[in-house]
Every structure is written in C-alpha cells, then in structure tokens.
Image 1: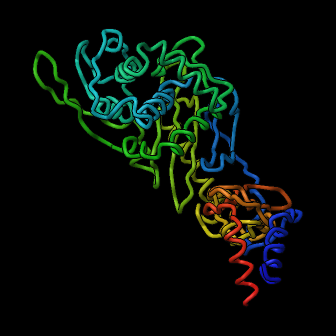
Image 2 (image 1 turned 120 degrees about the horizontal axis):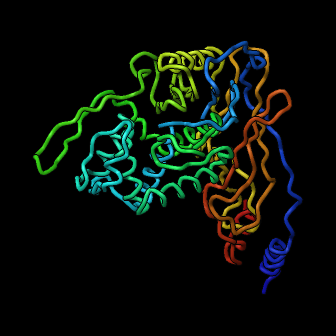
Image 3 (image 1 turned 180 degrees about the vertical axis):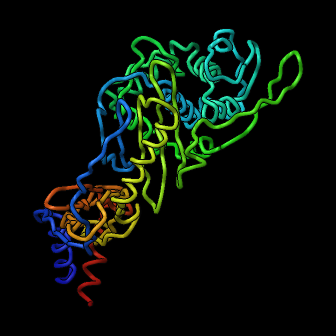
Length: 400
C-alpha cells in the first residue's frame, strides 16, 4: 500500500472515531411584530356565566364566573357532534349508514324532528338535524347507533370530557334535556367547542346551514320536514360560523357562538341568560370586544425551511431543518410591546438521522414571557456513511 492510500485510510478511520462536538444552541431574532399591553376591560354580562377565548391558542380573553357548573341544555350536543365526527374520522361509521329509530329515541321530547319508532334515517340526516334544529330524538338515535345505548354513549361523553380537561362537567344524556347532575361550566364548554372546531373544522358546513329539510319515510309514505337553525346570530352578526344554542327552563338561555374575522376566530360562551335575545346580545358584546382589541400573529407554516445543521458521519454533511407545526399567538392590537421569535438549533447531529428528528425549537416571547413554541425537525433521512463514502469524501477534499 503506498503512502497516500495509507494516509487516506488513517484519516478516514480517525474521522469515524472522532466524537461529536458539544452541542451548542445558537439564537437568532427574526423580524419583530409589535403589540400593546392587554387592554383592561370594563364589562358586565347579563348571564350567570360567560367566557371569550381564542381557539387556536386557548387564550382566555374575558371571563365571568366561568368555572361554575351549571345546567348547559342543548349546548351538550357539541360533545355529541364531536363523538359523531370522531367515529366518522376513525371509519367506524359512514355518512350514508342507515340508523333505525328506537322507541326510546322517538320519545325523547323537547326539540325534535318527530322521528317514529322503526323509522330509518342516514347518519348524515340525523347529524344535520342535531346541528341545525337541535333535535333531541336525532341525538338519542345517534347515541344508540354509536354505543348501543344512550347510557353507553354518555359514558363515552364523560370519558372524552376528562381527556379534554373539562373538570366541571358531568353528562347524564346526549341531548341536554334537564337531568339532576347534568352540568357544565362556561370554561368547559369553551374547551369542548375549541376541540370540535379545531379537530373537525368541517362541522361549520352543517352548523351554518340556515334552513334545510329532511324526508320522513314511514308506513304513511314520504313527508318533508323543515329544519331551521336555532342560532339567530348566523343572520345578524358578521363572521358567525357556529356553533350551538341551548334552552331549558332550569338552564335558561345559552349559546356557544363562534365567529371569524380577518383570520381571527373567537368563541363566546353565554350560560344562563334570562331570555333568548339577551344571550345573543351578550355573545355579540364579547365578540365585538375581542375583534376590536385583538389580532392573531402566525409563525412560519409547517414545513417552512429554517436552514441546515451539520451531520456527523453521514452520507451528507448537512441536513435541512423545517418547522414542525405553525405557531399562532394572540396579541392585543397596538404598537408598544415587541414579540420576538427566537430560533434555537443544535450545532450538529450524529448519523444516522431520521426525518422528523428534533433539531431545535422556535420560541415566541413577549415581555420576557414565552407565548408559544414549535419544534424544528430534520427534513430527510441521512444514513450513516460507510467506509466507501468516507474515502470518496476525503479524496474529493484532497484533490480540491
């Protein structure tokens, strides 16, 4: 073996044996966005409880008595819709599946579409009836279809409530008819509403329908039945795109209202208003405040390029780094407080590197407080280099 080959081999083996350098974080400040301090609201709400939140971040903007457990009435059906959409997503049911109405479901009373025992309707028609007309009989029929009984479905509702962090909630039925111990807080309703529209934004397609029909098919023949949305804000408040109203004599008049303007979505929950016009007025007041005083800033989209870092002993010397998830930050409108995005990247990674390996973070900070973060991950696989790769690389460098 000549001297050059021997030296190349020694260098190659040395390169494999060198330990990775100590990982260092490097910080980069990107262009700032400006904001003012949170406004200090002076507001009163003519209802037992209320809350205003932004659903992407979960930021609570306003709240009044938001953790008291109260009867929620038909706002309950937000959870029923959530579990229906979850079953659809998981492939356990399909929109065109036919559901047979039981005697129990047909006799639920309250708001209904007057299903008859033995009548069949599709999952789509029943879900539409729940979303638009708040049909208790449709909710009970879907509960039985999904879980075998309403009791089994209610157990699933309570399990999901725990998963979502709803600590002041107990469900007793699928529709919200008054029952002892059937309670929710305004904060829990906001969490539930947030979960529904974030995970299943397609629900807006149903809850924004103003009027529609279903067809009853019974022994008497076919008969059209009209559906009218219970959410009057769809016609009276700009940007309204949901979500659900509720009323019983014990619960009073309630609403979980969602609206979107200029890229900012808000959820306003009103529980226990004295009458129907008041619940809508109070929801408008909360939404007006939110849209007037807040905006939403978003970081780079998922997959955005954030540079490269070195790869030790890999088939490539560097790997691209991308944003894993887009970060949204709710900011008061104005121009006084600076929002900074700080990028922290590892100095290097050892091969093999798998795509999606965490390589750093982008952290959003305002007034010295973190307000959001997202992982930065590797964009591709980088296998570990074999001896042949390393020889070629060393020879290329030599000749260069």
